[in-house]
Length: 330
Image 1: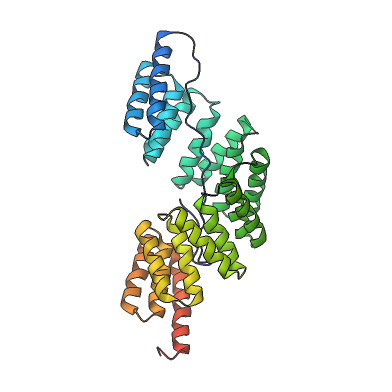
Image 2 (image 1 turned 90 degrees about the vertical axis):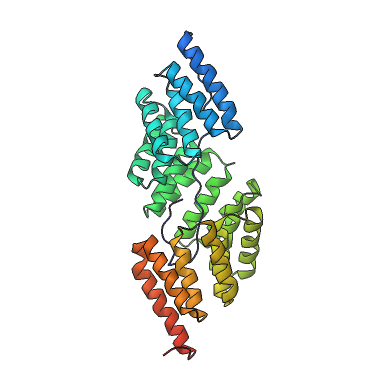
């Protein structure tokens, strides 16, 4: 998921989009076309529940062919295409569903999520606004808008949206975790820890809040608590790159450069386009006397994200100053 650069804080957060469940068929006027479309929708939903995306799409295709004006056919196919990672085609289907039913609140909510992932933040906010207009009590709409506002730097607006989402649905762990991240970003470490602890109580096997709480604990200087949280996050989801990245920052802060490099390497293997991981591994390698390897990491970082150039140059200068103070370079 796209997020603001964390070179300044060295810590990655996991934001969670609040997707609605795949819609079930809605009662239609009793005619042969709608009855046939509903049958295909129901069978497609069954395939979807089993993770059989291609079979689900095939049935949603048939539903649309049976009744081209059936908005739920496009909506369900859009959600399935999202699950496949096909954002462009998912967006096109959400567009069509909304064109057929301009009051289709679930389609606005989910289209806002796709637009968020595609970097269209203004479009995501527009869809979230429309969702809220149609159903002010829909917690996920407030939560999604909070995510977008946070990414745009409006942290107070994000907090206000997450507050509303929590009031509307106090049992959703993801919303507490996202509000915890927003609190972290305004320097409220205790508030972040409180929210992430609540998320963990609601959903103990949810890896993200363990990692994010570790980040807040690390910022407070509770390194033992931070390490325990990072370890638990990795135990719950060994393929969660952000937890490996965050634990690497712990090792780096403790001066254990070998372990830091190893964890940054795992983060890169799991998420090869995480520019910050290359930057941080390069800094660790530079401090550990691996200059040529460090330069390769710095080059890869800037290839992935040229906007990090100024921050990276500052951090490289600081690292070289540390080496000079040790007498390792002139």
